[in-house]
Length: 455
Image (cartoon, rainbow, N blue to C red; front, side, top):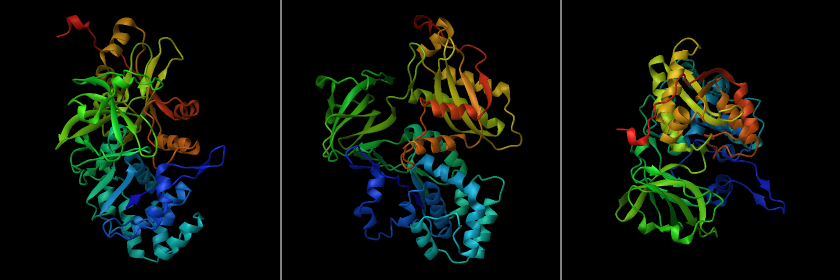
């Protein structure tokens, strides 16, 4: 059961069709005219994947997955976020889905001709199956729900590296830790880059072996020995003598990937930061670190996506003893007051009873984030006073789904959507702030000492 989605096409000013790379593939003869492969068969009929209405597409694909629940061996989506969105959608709509299975008739709110046609051929009244699904979904705790609904599933296939690593705990929760998280490939709209030769490894250990026949790779050095530097702005032209060929990259060093493709892109800066971590035979292997252009900055501090993720990962552990889990987060550098400060928006899932958040616990989370941020940030906070206390704003359940809907309505693809780790859109900030339930500030400065006095 792989959940795939298309996005409606747009037109350029001169009338040429423009669409996302995945939509282009799904609408191509390579996908629609593919020969049947029993090892790569989908529960979702092609018409449900090709439906432009993402809600109808999601509904029908989940319905098809439930109809075939005892045949499903693999679960997945392009990105982990899409699979979690599907679980949330199922939570809201399982009663309707069960009714469709029970009666053998598609819900009247489904109006897409393609979806109606293919689902009418798939559905037949099955009260026993409806009862099975209803019994599972009506439980108050959804821990391990994926294994219950699809008992023969062997693993989850989705991108869980980089910013998607945030979703690993939630996927493990919904699978009760029984399903391996498999991240098979590294690709972008511009080019297919590489494969993970150890697909069953821990998500934190995923490394990709670049395939040299896919394009010509060059690398812009960004640091070494665990120190990540940002040497060039995105708009800045990179001098030729700064670029490193694939065969000259060094173990442990960080690079920005630069690609020349068969399609005509010449020395195109992908914007991904990679770290060289090993070899397969003589082929270099890289770990995806972060997107280069995602940073928080108030003063002289520069916090990249990876540093932010590590800090939040440490802080969210403080929630676990209180039966709570961080589902999603993003950030914003608030400079509306002086000094400016970092704002984190957290959506938290409570396993236990009660909706109140302990102020002391949340303030400790604020401190934990700040303590993990780099030397420059902590100096600005503790010594210079140029950055104010970090703030965590706890938002209502479903806020990040609403955020996703907003970006999709503005042209983002549901297939390729990733929660921005730093929000710049005024509309997005307005939405987030309208959902805030509680706000907490760091009660003290993070620890800091001059370098020559540190142990």
